[in-house]
Image (cartoon, rainbow, N blue to C red; front, side, top):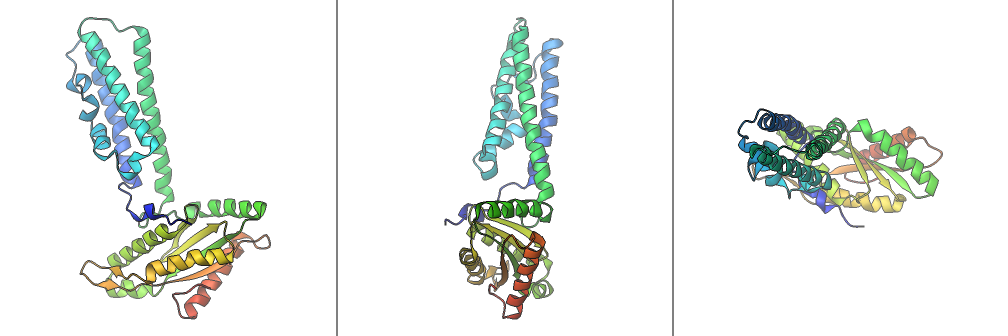
Length: 296
């Protein structure tokens, strides 16, 4: 299976940054719309933000989108559509403002079309805002992985699918070895960097449909659908080597050797999810006491 190398690069924006920008865009759009109406209703000279050929780029949102349009998250279809709606709304509003400024009345059908464009932009912005509000509550802020809040929903779904189709599914618990000594020796900032580095390496080596969660502290829980114990062990070995074979580079130029221990249990009909996780935890305990840096 192909590795998820795309995940090894940092995401340019976290959910809180996207939320801040989209919230600002909605507020900014309300101010722009007020300027537009003042020009039309009060017959004032239109604001440059209304009639400029580059009106959409005079807004904070428009310039931000244009600057980052080809970067990761903002290159996805939902944001491309939001940018298109933003430009369409500004360009049509500009034409109507010019028409009004030249003494021509705006037909009701054109005003209604403009109102629809405004509503479409606001609707898309609010949908994205709500999606990222949910994401913010579901993601671990340090590693960017899903947290335990959504974990059981995903595991229930994958267990049900595995039992229904007969496809294998395995649960893996991973724990960074001697992590307390990292914090005690180097400080929590280095400990956080180790966690981020291990999470990034795991993401880069998992298959596209695997799921990984920050389980707590220095522990991760990984769900491997469509994998029997043998196939799951191959995936885990990639994860183990991705950490063990490459020490974590520190800011002072030194490199910190890090290893991870793993416990694996196959999902089956006889055991509930809670039991399966407990069995994986027992296997992890055996790996720790068997010398660490291994899978049991």
